[in-house]
Length: 261
Image 1 (cartoon, rainbow, N blue to C red):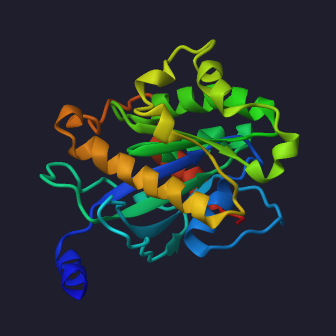
Image 2: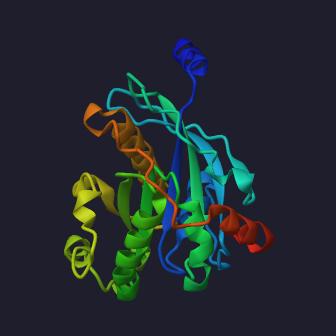
């Protein structure tokens, strides 16, 4: 085991950018806090703009039994928010662990212009809804379309997460309905981006660490698979982004955006 860990240290650790999207109050900040800090709190504070935390995780493998190993780094919004350009391009084999840069973004519409600047270069988007709030499901269509427009990535990975399964008695939407709902009245088919609906449409609770761990481990695995699979070798091709002034968004964010988690 020690020899294996030493070998892992010798390999460069690739980076993946993960962005969490969804309406105000669906639990985006709590999901990230549970995964990185293993804490849950009912004290709610809205995220303004966005920020990211970085952690290192082991890629789940069927033949291994080890858990995720994490090293966290909190950061404020700054000009290097696009420094997460992944190092997976050209990988000939799947790495044993990756650095996840996990972005938490504001769920309020008035912060959309700021948050959208942080979508660029995303490897995997995690779209979160509240199983007790039907409107939060409908809103995912808008979140998804805005993400695709501003990510400037040809074919990023997408996961759909239903949060708050601890409130089962208040459920207003079933997991089996989600795919059909998200494919209605939309200009961009989400089916073109969700690789595996069985694996990438999950229901979790921020209070349950094991479910949250599986969520982010799957996000890491998905990002690695997309960028190392020969059939998806162009998945991270960056598209033109003439329509957005990133520096303007960064300037506005640096003066007014802080995470309140």
